[in-house]
Length: 322
Ligand SMILES: Nc1nc2c(ncn2[C@@H]2O[C@H](COP(=O)(O)OP(=O)(O)OP(=O)(O)O)[C@@H](O)[C@H]2O)c(=O)[nH]1
Ligand SMILES: [Mg+2]
Ligand SMILES: [Zn+2]
Image 1 (tube, rainbow, N blue to C red):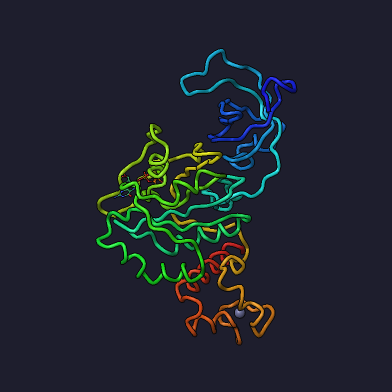
Image 2: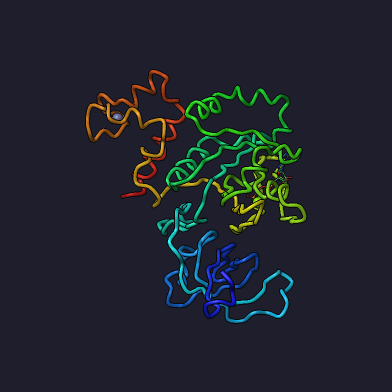
């Protein structure tokens, strides 16, 4: 929409938000957006207005020239338009409402590293539940730092990797360092993609690799633990390709699912075909008699590690609920 039209009121997209400092983008121009006080999100909670949100923006002051940060003016955020979906994580404050990370997503890349530290599969499975919860969405499981492997074929021999492939998740091994990032150099050109994963796996490095001259801050992982140093502190999106937007996010640690879901069962996609076959309709899939899920685990049809992570999540949610 032309900014001059319609009383300087036009649609814009939120690129980043730090407290009440919001950067919005419209027609390739960036503006500072100040939320109207009457809007709920003006309260101190971090929720309610996030990267990816479409908003109605009223331009109040158009600068003569863009400032050093490339900002062309400032105005008011008058309304948040309805969302397609929103990726949530638990609040860092115990008991607080879920934190909204980014909205209107087309795909999520759960990024992990193979070395120097193989990202724990428990963490991946928890992020995966949150990703499945954020429908409609396309999910990619991506392992980075292939250059540190002696032999790429070893990766595909990892039992958990074979399980994800069998469940029909999209599994990829890449090396940002060697610029071996196919097919993401193409896929990320369209729609909005969220990069999520532990600190130090290379989320920001992947964006730097795709978009030259961006030079976003990255930090080496600890020599001792292989863990990252939390270089990125804010969710922020970058434009790439045709209409691509890539959302960089801060590294996640435990990724509890408190307050996000009440039952993890619908989000373990390989469980679904067994659900109707449990003896009791209110089967908890734990120690219940005649549980079809448990039987499938015993028969090796459902992977033991996935079931273990499922039980961990269920128990965590239950403990937290009371
Ligand atoms: N060997 C190797 N190192 C990589 C690769 N990709 C990234 N790194 C390194 O891993 C370290 C962490 O990269 P970042 O891009 O900061 O990781 P991040 O996921 O953004 O981390 P946070 O912002 O802390 O969440 C940096 O030292 C990168 O140079 C890769 O493909 N191979
Ligand atoms: Mg980063
Ligand atoms: Zn059951």
